[in-house]
Length: 303
Image 1 (cartoon, rainbow, N blue to C red):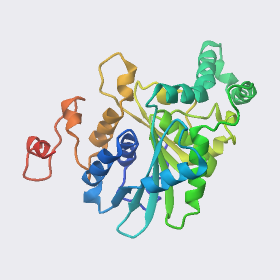
Image 2 (image 1 turned 180 degrees about the vertical axis):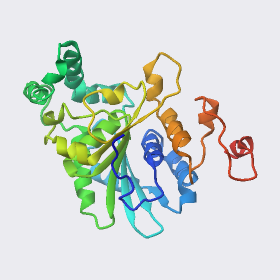
Image 3 (image 1 turned 30 degrees about the vertical axis):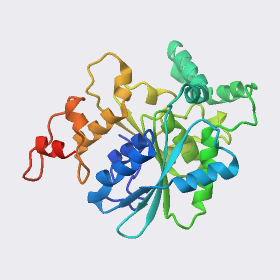
């Protein structure tokens, strides 16, 4: 395991599971998110809320409302009085978003397949980013249109000037995690993603380009076993492999974000966070040991 210090942002009670949880929240409707946040975070003493006003105002002022893709901003006010802003990028949730996001990494995916099929293919890794840069220079689509990562980078730069925040962090799942990595490297902001697409090979194709040093310093990827998505492109230095209990031959089962959250809770303990009924009911995890007078079944009835 290679690991970034995930507690350096004044959130000492937080773990990888908390960032995974917020990456899942990016797929949920706002009313569901508002209902879920106090259930998950209340025992920690941190006040976590979703801030829709800043995001909506930014998209309206800059005319980005029609851009495919979405991200949420969460405000975390700790018992110490510090405020951390956590931006969670939604993964692919429509065919349009999938088409646009996949175009960012299609060349990297094809190059990986080519490298795998070549004798001593790893010897070609060093020049591959330069080859991909040349390929990306071929005009395609409207060059004036911006991708979500470019809009997200603009938003982060604005919020870094906002005195309200002591620290900013990004998270996301799948292609949302990949976009979080791009903006994290461009803005020098930490990103912790679940099953995120990587960017080491394709780093020179983005605008502005990013460097290996930036990816190594600012990104952290949680990689479930058998999950093929976080193996697209080459992984940067900070990552954590986790297990997947799925016995299905379908590798997308291990890409399920709630299953991965269950694995993190099972291996590391839930701490001050609630235990999810889904972990035992749907994903094959044993009933957890409770620290009170109630059985697991009684606790689940309350949820």
